[in-house]
Length: 319
Length: 319
Image 1 (tube, helix red, strand yellow):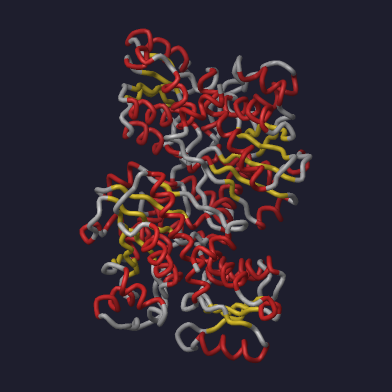
Image 2: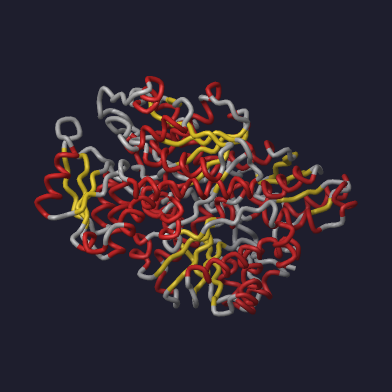
């Protein structure tokens, strides 16, 4: 399914570069590569899953329009994929999403429905609107076509690692519901089995790390209050978790302050813009090295949709 | 020479992506592509010329070490190329260079000699040290091997434009001494003659635009006071100017404020970090469209080595 998704994605997706800097290697004490998915269309890897879902579903069903719930990156990915397929998209977003993400989703032609992250259940809102208006729900991670689309990042990593002469490595992935993590893990199982995928999360929202440790799905205590909005989800997915359990190492956890510092170092050393949730994997590479075994890490930088005020806060860590 | 340089560069250079955003197309009123050379090793295209010069010169001469003068990007490019060839590098830099550029050049193993941009002549300082210590001078632009290295950007643009289905286009290049401009123009003359190269400069330091208009080399009135430090040079080069004269359209000129706004839009829409002098071409694409003829422009984003304080100033334009 991942290879089939890669074929559907080939004409539209951006093959994002693998970046590095000797200055980052020095901080980490090992070789660090960054897969810059912030440079993907819509500013995050989510365009891959959105395109995979839209291009892979029955054309008749698709013609009636799609609906998605998302804090903003899946929203934009689905909105752009829908626009380019010429079909309607409704996106259900928390009302505390970054302003840029809400504005972009609308600018991409989608209808945005806001909800209260702490008191509403987005799955219920999504299901209701989908039923009322005959829309196909595109889930953000617990959906095979979406996982397959995100898995194309893993195929690219395997190919680029071969080009760079990278063998054994740990691949650090920012983990929300686990769609990207599971997709990359499945791709690398086939293409680069010497690599080990590790989930990366912000402290307090480390449901994947705790679930992997417990051997069963464990939920987060709360849904609000992290600057890493892109990867705050209630718990790992029912489809993604068994994949992660089978293929991933123990989860890594960083603080919000470390995520901000990683954003600043990505600015300074790689010349890329990361959002907090997109910088957690790089933060783990740079500041949680004691928990990493390999001499080489590949940190997947998952998104760059960040408001200027938060980015300015990150830059202050350089002063 | 450009094709030969491309072969020497292939194992070490980063093939930088061609980025785009529908939001930028809308501002410009035409299709805008950005060749992201800020993602090149050392954060600017200058690594190409540095590597081309070091790898292309006589090995015996190279072994004695090299010297370069630069406000910082050529400095880092030559420093890294020298370090990877295992030879000494001395870099002559203005004492008002961005702190990051001075620090990085030292961190890459080079010896940095500072001078006063307004009162000293860097060519004289460079020649004196070169003679005293038996170093080979690597000029920043008026040197065929350097022009050939920078020209590899043009080969990549031609290939990437074919992949994207781009035909006729104007290629906007940030122009200091003209090494990159001349190199790209020569590469495109052979590989994509339907493209027209245009120089881009900050107001008050538009020696290339005025020289092209006058049909002879005209110097800038002053050397200090622009935030676009990377592309402030006294005048076009003796080798580069005739090439520009033969192959380039009229020069485009932007204000510092437009450069800062382009940096902010590159942050917001492309998720890349540009320095002021690296954003002038994108600023021309976005804000000087009346002077552009083609439906498609390719803006070469030449560098991203910017101090956090200047970047924060750029972000303020989004508020």
